[in-house]
Image (cartoon, rainbow, N blue to C red):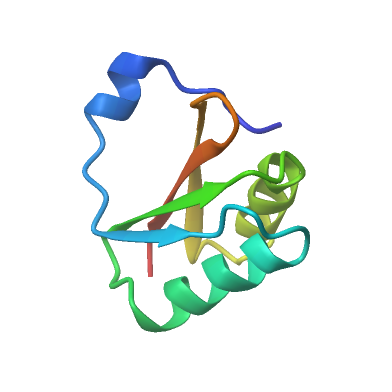
Length: 91
């Protein structure tokens, strides 16, 4: 299950790449995240995905858990109207 982060936890995360997928419905945010993780984010870096589709919480968590250890879903923060999701590229 996706972990909801606290404001303090979010403030301690430094995103290396930010992708804005607000306004897109599924599968848009997932495709944007996968594209960025495959081409823009280097191992050890963190992707921040902005999404107004609340289904992204579950879908992103599932995608990372099925990635064979390539990606780690850190969690999300509900800003009000959209979520900030954080994914670390492990390898």
